[in-house]
Amino acid sequence: MPTFILAMNWTDQGIRTVKDWPKRNAAARELGKKLNVDIKQVFLTSGESDVLAIVEAPGDDNVAKFCMAIGGHGNVRTRTMRAWSEAELVKMVGELP
Image (cartoon, rainbow, N blue to C red; front, top):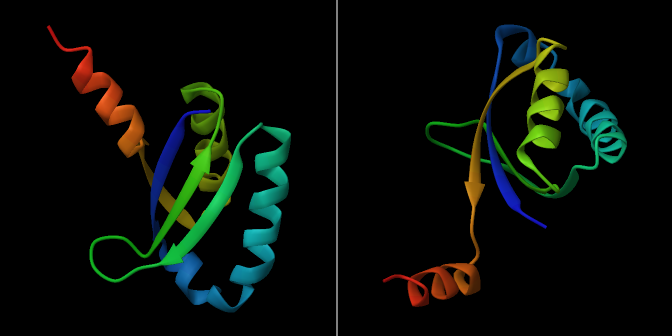
């Protein structure tokens, strides 16, 4: 299944209510199940993003719906990147003309 990295930043509302994050994370995992998005790992980060999530989903549409749904709650803004594993990269490079 394709892998995606979700880079998230808390909104003003999200950081004001950061103590509710464990409940929001559990709710996001349930939402992910409904949309066929499997949240593999979540990281608190320093730098450009506040939180990163590694997810797997059958396609871009699943991830887009998931990001719109969690963004609609007003606690985070998301940026999504498709990620290829090292093995997938080796395969792609091997297929280059």
